[in-house]
Image (tube, rainbow over all chains, first blue to last red; front, side):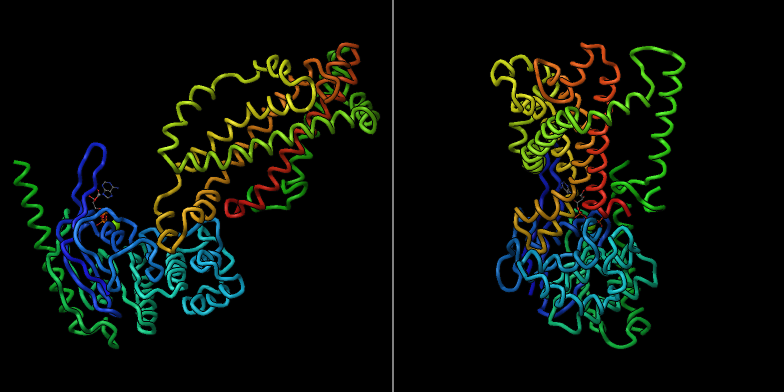
Length: 260
Length: 255
Ligand SMILES: Nc1ncnc2c1ncn2[C@@H]1O[C@H](COP(=O)(O)OP(=O)(O)OP(=O)(O)O)[C@@H](O)[C@H]1O
Ligand SMILES: [Mg+2]
């Protein structure tokens, strides 16, 4: 579904040149999930922008669904870090937005969104505005809005990072349910080790900026019953934590070296 | 205060407004009784003349002035808002236009009144043109700055949903700028009435400005105040309408 080969991204500002991503390669099977984990500011959001076709200025090859990545691919859905909901639209108007932009008629888009709003428990709040919702509800709206256009590729940027632990696990469960019910490829960027291991059949560990692939971890237990409390789950978490801690130490050592 | 209590006239809480009016009229009355000046009749006399004349000539002049102000505001809005949204989002064009605005904006347009009258005579058009000249830039600058500060992530997220350029304007830039457009409109309404007054006192035979100036030249102070009351009402009603529209259109701002 996704094929990335030697991807590099450089931000060229007026007074600085920031290499954000250096030589990333990885691939994702159709219908699989992948979690990308890495330190803050390493270039994760940048990578999602490239995959969503919103950043055409990159080097290397990026293919989505066996074709070079392009803007406005209709089957790609992107959920940004701050959810990107429109404050002037109610929950329901936000959810149907994708269909509205595609010119789907009013009654049809409403009926097509009932199901997903019901799945995510949004029917009770459908006439409220985003500012009237809790963080978890807002995130649900963002998921519903993305799902309403029936994407085959879902890109999420730290979707649950600002939520409390229980809400977060709840939404992770919701996401897996939605995923297993559809032929959908999910790529999720996260800071959270447990989240990466719970959701990603493949976990990609990125190095600090400019991001490169530090490791790729296969994690095939995702979606199996009781996964979150299984021995294997904890084993992968520990392994991942080990990698990230080592990375952090090296980074500190490098910084100290620079400083002296 | 928001969202609480009952809302009355044009969406504003009625009771505090009635209280404010009562307070102002009482103060006026006391001052008038205390000072005993011809130039300051008691409100009872002023309102008496107002009520007497509003069904006649004063009503006509009020109509003329209302028409001029409304047309000016609508025309400015229709011209300035789309241009402002566009300039706010297209830095390449803005780089070209911004210096122009920078130079023209602070120039007091009212000083062109004699020129405009010389060119276009004494009808409605020169007055509307003058008001538009003044308030167009105020709306333009506010709208442009509002469009500029629209959050890029919001735009990106609707681009990712497949929005076209035009849809980005319709679905994001325009609604995001709307509250600021209303703020601009509130400011501009007062300015528009002030500019109208000046242009109507300048060789004119119609409008509240003329009515007040004419009464003044005859030292008919009760009539002067009747005209002032009409002008005040024009302002208050326009504000009320703006408030009402704001609450309806920007509902998410008033939760
Ligand atoms: N428009 C831009 N211009 C210049 N540099 C940028 C721009 N956007 C991001 N960067 C830089 O590129 C690097 C990667 O940014 P990015 O947002 O992709 O990081 P991230 O991994 O998503 O971080 P976080 O985990 O904090 O969200 C950062 O160092 C950032 O400062
Ligand atoms: Mg990020």
